[in-house]
Image 1 (spheres, rainbow, N blue to C red):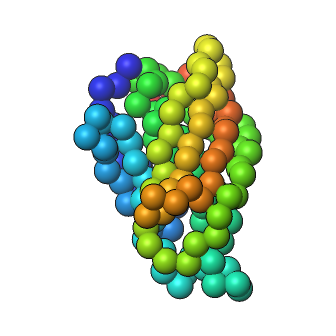
Image 2: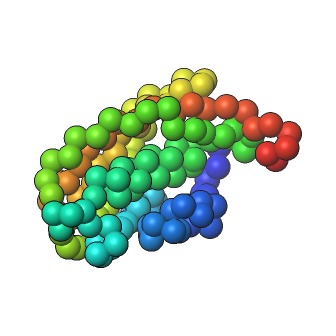
Length: 136
């Protein structure tokens, strides 16, 4: 297993494009952050569900990435999100945790907060595969 990983901003051009920020909590758990700005708002002036989905997916992927062997890769199979509250300003913070891991599947949960308010909860399934020789 990897003890620490590179920030997803270095390995994911999409995460960088969206403006996600990455750090670790005091216990080392990955946290994904998104500063709310006009570019992530929907027509109602609240954060677009797609922006929250991206934050959730990346938070779970980054958490799982820390659990992989060097020769393993992951792909999102599905994500189910409950959007609980709308928000227009502040910083969204997503934290994930591993629920179950088998040889080929992993199930994680992620929670998004903004200033102490719960915004969304999600559960996701990821496929774990061996890297192809060309990927190494």
